[in-house]
Length: 209
Image (cartoon, rainbow, N blue to C red; front, side, top):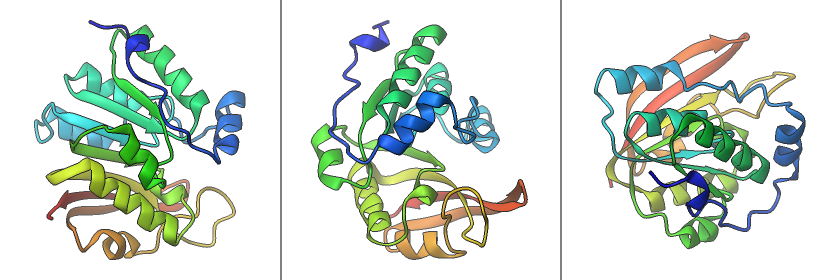
C-alpha cells in the first residue's frame, strides 16, 4: 500500500482559509468530533452504500474519509484548511490507510475543476455547506458538486437549520437545500434531529441530471 504522503495531497490555491487554519491550529473545532456520523455508518454497514469513489467536502481532520478508506472505498477528502489536511494526513498514516487529501475551496469552481479529480459515486458534507455564507457562494458550491458527482450518484448532507442562534454556522432555510439543488437532484431522504437545542437536517440526494 502506498504511503499517504506519496499521494498528490496538497494541490489547490484556496484563499480565505485563515480562520479555519487558526481554529484547527489551536483546537477550537467542536465540529470535528473524531468519528463519522451514525447515519453514514448505518448506510455502510447495512450495505446500502458499497465501496466506490467517494469525496468528503470540508473533511477537516479526515475522520469520515479514513473510515470509508478502512471500509474499502477509494476515499478522497477536501478542505480549505491546510492545517486540517496536515492533521488528516497524520491520522491516516497512524491508521494504516492512504486516502487522497486536497486543499481547496469548494466554492471556487475553477479551482475544483483544476484539481482534475474525476467523477465520484458518493459525495458527503458534514457541516461545510451550512457554514458558507448564503447567496452566490452556495450556488458556486452546487456548481462544483455538479462537476464532481456523476449522474445517479449520492450526495449526503448534514446541516443546521437557519435560526436566531448565538452560536454556530449560519445554517440553511427549511427548504433551501431543495431550492438550490432541486433542479438536478432528487431528495430521497430528509430527516431532522436536535443537537444542543438546534435543529439538524440530514439529506440523501441523488443526482438526476
